[in-house]
Amino acid sequence: MNPLLKKLQPYPFQRLRALLAGTVPSKDKAAINLSIGEPKHPTADVICQTLTRSLDGLARYPATLGSVELRAAAASWAGRRYGIELDPEREVLPVNGSREALFAFAQTVIDPAANSIVISPNPFYQIYEGAALLAGAEPFYVNCLPENRFQPDWSTVPETVWQRTALVFVCSPGNPTGAVMDLDDWRRLFDLSDRYGFVIASDECYSEIHFGKPPLGGLEAARSLGRDFRRLVMFTSLSKRSNAPGLRSGFVAGDAALLEAFLLYRTYHGSAMSPAVQAASQAAWNDENHVEANRAAYIEKFDAVTPLLSSVLQVERPDASFYLWARVPGGDDAAFARELFEQEHVTVLPGSVLARDAHGCNPGRGYIRIALVAPLEECLQAAQRIRQFVTSYLPT
Ligand SMILES: Cc1ncc(COP(=O)(O)O)c(C=O)c1O
Image (cartoon, rainbow, N blue to C red; front, side, top):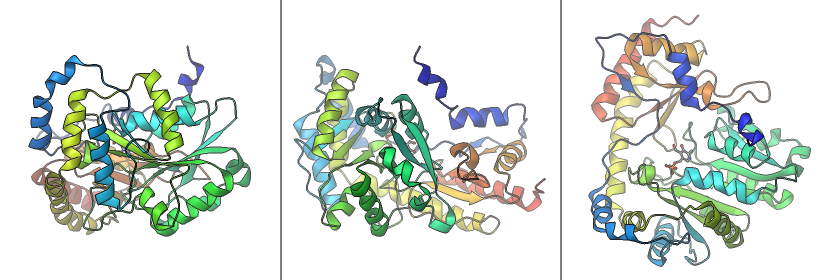
């Protein structure tokens, strides 16, 4: 057995299940689950129809590199969205969702014999940590606190850690906080990468769920600062943008030399995308109408739900993403989530299960993550139940 498997932590939803085990929610209230970040809006017709029209592709082995047409569609989308020019031959690779890509990228970039460190924001998407551990690296967590706009505070990273750092994960818009990196944030990170030579993996899968101001992308920031894409790769996905988490489709773009190595790794890993999925993905990247409709549905939910919650909880609409990151009264997020489930049958994710104890605190403690993925009516009902709950909640 690979001994590194023992280092993996239980997934946040396993922790949530353990937390809620033994509680009996009120039977007269229908369950509302706002804990999982799984898009629930319908997948656009253009994707479903292209997928079904392309089933003849099941009779062929796909190339890991993906079709020329898909890479060209991804590059054109990035061009329209970020005003950047990507070479679809060398700077774009299709992936089966950003999750597998984030994981596999760490396996490509890390030298297991080099005693490397992988830096992760904290709280974070747990794949970063597992990817680092299974690559034989040591994770180092950088807290994202409200006093630093929920951005990682790089000044807390000791020089000795920077010297061993091979890879830094950033997530903008962030899960769970929804915070977006601005140009100065990118400038600081690029300066550090120039100084210490680490690779940046920029997870941008929530980039299209915003409230009118499209979040700055990592590649866009590099170009704005007059840089090339050296040591920088961005990860994007159709899961949230196009409500297609079951399609398992995204792409990575950036440093051509890193992508060449990544392609080699992926060829052995067997992560080519099905031709039918490639065709549907190409159609998805070429269409912006369904993305705008999707965004409008989230804006409607945030506009309705945020004022209801902000009158009883410390919470604001995020820069982007479909999460609310709310402070709970009393600071015990686990107790709050458990009692909310028991009394109101509403499931939210306690922030402490999304973070690790680091630098003297767990930066997720005291927060809950509310995913506004359910239909508007359900989100509204959940917000009303949360309000009701908070007004009588007595923290222990
Ligand atoms: C921050 C973050 N990155 C990546 C992913 C993976 O998404 P997918 O593999 O569907 O592209 C998720 C999924 O929830 C996420 O929250």
